[in-house]
Image (cartoon, rainbow over all chains, first blue to last red; front, side, top):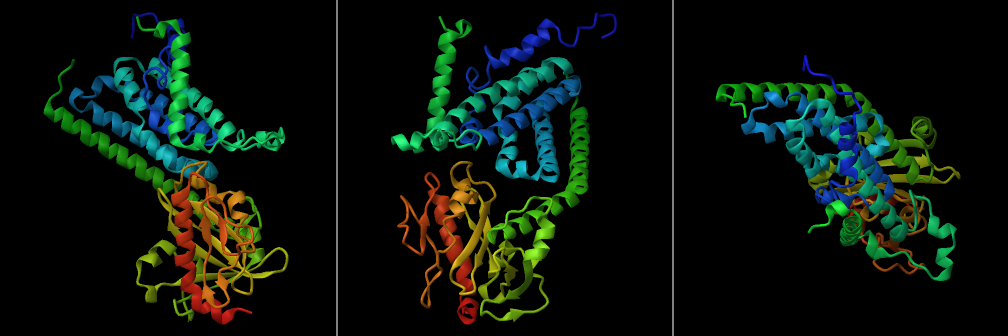
Length: 216
Length: 233
């Protein structure tokens, strides 16, 4: 990179890389990636938040690693290399959680392992990190993790509130006396199909309000 | 696109795999003591919770030595087996053996209110993986004093509700025996009759986990049948 002018760490372009996945290019609502985990972990708010954080960390760091060695990765085995990097990151995160934050690791149980199969990770490595420098790739990973996490938290909030009557385990519906008026929790909303319908509704609202997404 | 020779690809993948393997085994070895300690604390904590004592990670070891008074191992005929440490028995491995060779751990405890109880471990299958827990019985060897359940990977909000106090709270006071016959505890979809001394509510959306739990209680506790009948007061 000698001779070229160094780009500032937080240039407008990098900022765009960070914010783009949260709106115009959201991995869940626009690219429709990572749907299966979005359905599985959104019954309660807490696992959704921890899952969002874990995915963000893994996406950012595997993007960083792949981008750093992108020029040395043979094209023919690049998918395998990407998978190995993701799997290594996920196992490391899982082991660290088990050793130091055992309670969180219990909460997440199988879902940490399932990050490996999250399409967002492979998608970002293949589409972005293979063709960009480490720092923008790292930001791209953070942005996509945040975009994914945002939708997870919205869906989990709605499902936990109307399905179990709680927010982050706090019994809101009970406290405001909703049950006395004959209100009952909607058991349907804690089942996976309802999560899919909620994601569909979010996609609909998102597409109808964002002009960039309206197809001609 | 840069072309790479086969030779390069082979060397690249070998180096990558070896370094990843080294890194991961190093991490696993270094973190193992901390992880095993967590598991041991977790086991003791679950046992304390089954006699309705809530412990934090910090005071678990202390409370365990205060409340859990002893342990012994039985065979399926209810006879004492010598030379086996009840705490280190892995129930999953025992269940693979024929019934006559299985070691059945029993823990004795003084609960917080002075009640003398025995704690029996249980393990079975949920929807996605193993479910397990501890059941404590009063000295009549039939009335449940408390329970603690846990799971490996049941769905949060659905099957995973088996380890919430709302579900576990239905068990104390229920009975395993009707006179001399072993009934165990049934889970009822749509809610159990509150007067039913052998029934609790199933979890909505968690039918397979609830059924698995019912089978687990029956299959694990019936092995203690001889011992329980002999020692009841």
